Length: 471
Image (tube, rainbow, N blue to C red; front, top):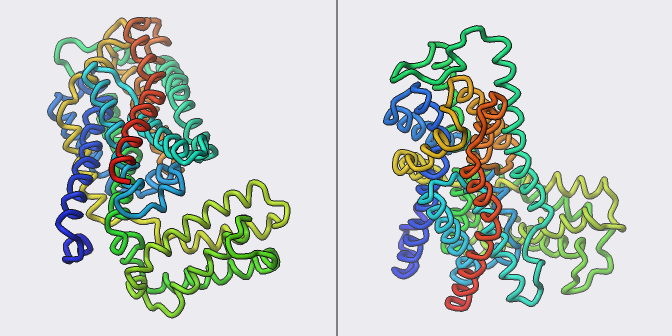
């Protein structure tokens, strides 16, 4: 925060930074009332909690999920972006990238929310990232090279498999409940305003909070990552490196960089200036790191005009390491493993988020949860199945969603709360034989299918315009 208000930024840059942060927090606000409606639908429609209490609980748990959930998913999202855009410091294409993907994601989210369709914010954001990458590569005459396809495939697999697992696991859990729970009230729709039996009510409240918490852990981190991109691009001296890292970290990072050069010594003898072989690129960037980190007692001792160069060097090392591991015929696997281990030692210099960024995103997501939730709640609670949601169906869908999203967050995989929980509700309806409302399922499926290409087209178009305007 000090780096923003230390007087080093011009009024114009401060104004641009403020606008960008408002847009980023607006994305999380929309995400709150768009996605988290899924978490409260089951407790509201099973009469477990009145709507104000359910939404308040969900908002609080979303806040806590963001604040205590780490930044693994944030880093996974950032690593989907093209390296040449990530190293574009300042108000050029790097900033155009962030604004384009945020605007594209917000436009699609607001459109599907207005129609009451539980579409995926995760799919939307990842589609926007891919659109920006493809547009950037096309503008550079290298169409298709602007996306980390390996990372995109891993993320895409998580997004594709999570709703299938949600459907199957929720259906299976309800099937098991049918055979072990004797109380038939669990499998009937609520009568008037009568709450469910005590134990199932407690489970529903717990899972509502759990889904909201894990949603914050997963989706909230995406906003953290995007805000960090904005701060790094506009205030590189203050945010390119973790200025709050322990003093010992600088010595450890320098030692790791020196060790990496040692591992590569036998493989870079023929490298000339400007060599593009991965091992040569890594060695050249490590030389920059060695010079920048040598003799420093803390990260703050690195001159402000060198901090961005350190981050850029690490990004290029990561890209070259990925290519080295995928195609190397000259560097053995053991050496590559040692390089990757030493690179992980340097990671705390750049893989971080200030506490106030996490707090701001947590507040935006939590407040957003409490506003505008009703449209999608009605769809999930009334329009997916042909019959009213029962206590057992709500508990099964919520429990599966909580576990699936929580595990995905721990492994740094962005998944869709919307897809998991909506699919879980559908699975319970099928296993109960109550059937699905075909028109709603068709509309939801259409929104799911269109989300990626629509977000890609929107973000690509916005990025192309912004890149031409701001250079």
